Length: 188
Image (cartoon, rainbow, N blue to C red; front, side, top):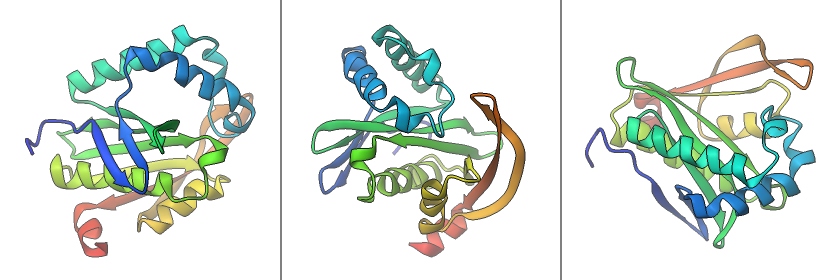
């Protein structure tokens, strides 16, 4: 694979796949967000800015521009051909060799290893295909499920960032995780 080309489709087995969304997916994405708003609100601060399919269409358009720029790839997460969440490899910086990953999933798709597979695919793509040196994940310190994904995949906690974000008026600390190319290869 060309070290500058971002992969946009991933078949991860057992009915799990990631694909870049198109404008035609805007309604489905909005419905998924809207139906799971209460669940997602615990950890995601962008929900109040997503009030219509036009907002998710803007998100999809921005993601397409980031692919063209080579700075991010954001995919819909599918389980048995049904959109169940999103996963992003973002802030790709070839100069520093770094990128980070973010994700969310609807509650009915949790607990089946779906996000773990998606995150592993993006780590492998970043470190092996794109030739980056390190992938980082920043999660709310109290988000035990996301922290467990980092632990399961062998990422090391490298610190705590106090006041990393404000979620609906509440300051939230983040646990910072990272994995280097040698550490990723060693765990495989």
